[in-house]
Image 1 (cartoon, rainbow, N blue to C red):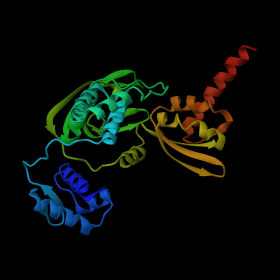
Image 2 (spheres, rainbow, N blue to C red; image 1 turned 90 degrees about the horizontal axis):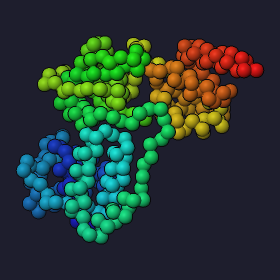
Image 3 (cartoon, rainbow, N blue to C red; image 1 turned 90 degrees about the vertical axis):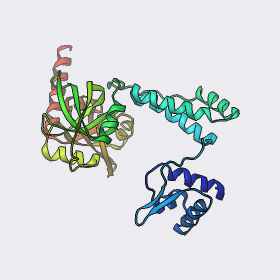
Image 4 (cartoon, one colour; image 1 turned 120 degrees about the horizontal axis):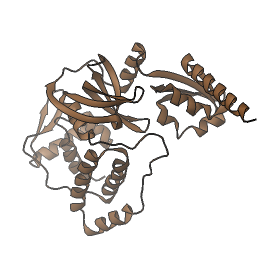
Length: 319
């Protein structure tokens, strides 16, 4: 990247946040801090109103913006591919917002780049894998994003799979996570007085209230998982060992069952999962026969034993 392109890219980066650290710029463009200081000084001498806060970083003075930025062909292509994922892995609220952003990007492309995108559009597709989980429904992800950032209490009408009923929950949202082929809202449930995992496709109605809640002492998915395991509520940690030849077969399906981690030892693969549906997990593991061994929990072993006994009884009747 030549210096003119780098200066432009640094200026764009400075407009993405309220304050940007010099170390962040150095890491992104793989250059020394001395070069960062020199480039920022060059921008300031060119008339760009850049301020700084000691020990924090640089910022652009309010009111200053670059004129419309031209995207490179690679950048525009990357956004188009991201749009394919958005179409398959989010709800309508996010899809509409992303499509609007993509149209703005296309509007600043030259004719050759527009033709390139139109041609590429017809040659890329994202197929939803075969799974029993439903596609993301509803129209809530955008509202939930705003609630997370604004720390707004949310009212949910939530369908409970285990009890086959809809309950109303007042929750404090802390994050949105995509795992096990679905979006999940992690929130403090005031009804249960603990953290809960709500699958977004099971939310039937949602209302963001004006009430603001104080943030609780949790910030990452791992912290949330740990809190669930400590309280032993709803979610169960599962540890299973697959024979090596079987472990290769589960690579595409393991993420639908709350996959967390794996480690190889003596030709076997130990995998850990976090799930709220042990019977579903048992039915999945049953398909691997002798190629898998359950280490814990004991409840999952009991469920598996019951399934095997039912199958044996069923097929003995047919003999």
